[in-house]
Image (cartoon, rainbow, N blue to C red):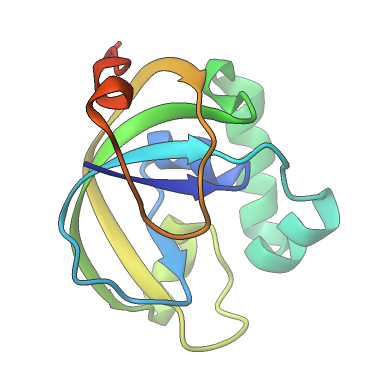
Length: 140
């Protein structure tokens, strides 16, 4: 299993069906520990990345759902990375990202499941997990 870190709110949005976007592609397919970075994006950056319409959707979603998995510096979920592909116009809504520059790569996850959050020091790229960390994963 590998781990990857997201700045909030985008890590938390993975629990709400978000298509992930990155500037890089990967050949890896399989389980990924989804981790929230210790620092979240400032509001201005979220608006810049998501655009006003998607930003409003994020705010609405945050107001109506549990934020237990919004904890900074924690592992919050596990998902299965099943596909990567070039981002297209129709990906803007499900990715919560406005297509403001190119190229972005969509990382498609399935079966994203919440876990009991636990402290985890993530990385900007893939991080291989040791068995002790894997043993901390408790699905909700």
